[in-house]
Image (cartoon, rainbow, N blue to C red; front, side, top):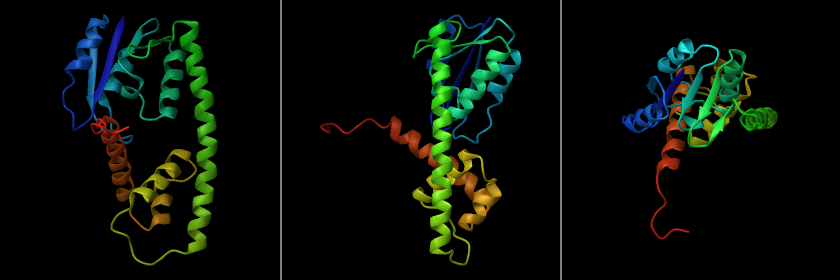
Length: 200
């Protein structure tokens, strides 16, 4: 059985293109989430994963519709492999039932490990620099984009809890979660905005 999964952002609530492509690819059931950001819940993805059985295929239009991050994507592909389920990505021509498709995810895994090591190093350097400058009193009402990026690197490195990251910046846990979501939405908006006419 082919099970299709798609995701649209909360700003773009038009899943028809993904649903049509998945149906045309022979998917017997299609699950669509409306969610933005790495921390957003994806109940339809959870349901799709529960539906899959050994020998089935999970079909998506693009990799970024499936994974919240590179590490999440690697974790999902490992789970599918353990359960005997293949992953098919229509736009990128990936099919893990083939040797080339399996090799692609092995390469992704190596990249994720390298990226994690770099993030850990940047996190340690950022914390050391912040301590050297000293912390000013009082809670900040919000984080700047640069601070939000540093907070995301700390979060993805997995070495600190959200509460510890919030303490480093003098804000609440809710503020960290809110700014991580806003940063994801900002980056998604930049990717989706076409370049101005005449720009090089």
